[in-house]
Image (cartoon, rainbow, N blue to C red):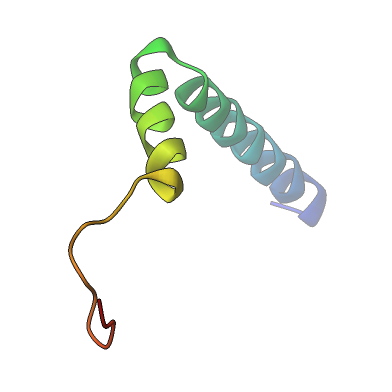
Length: 54
């Protein structure tokens, strides 16, 4: 197997992986989880952290 064939196979594998990740990220089942994760920085945390004084 020469380097051109190997390069082509690796390229096809990466394209398939990329399409799989895009499909997973934009699937309807992931929307609620991503929306919840996106709101995390804006949620109030009532419990004091170590070193915090209230």
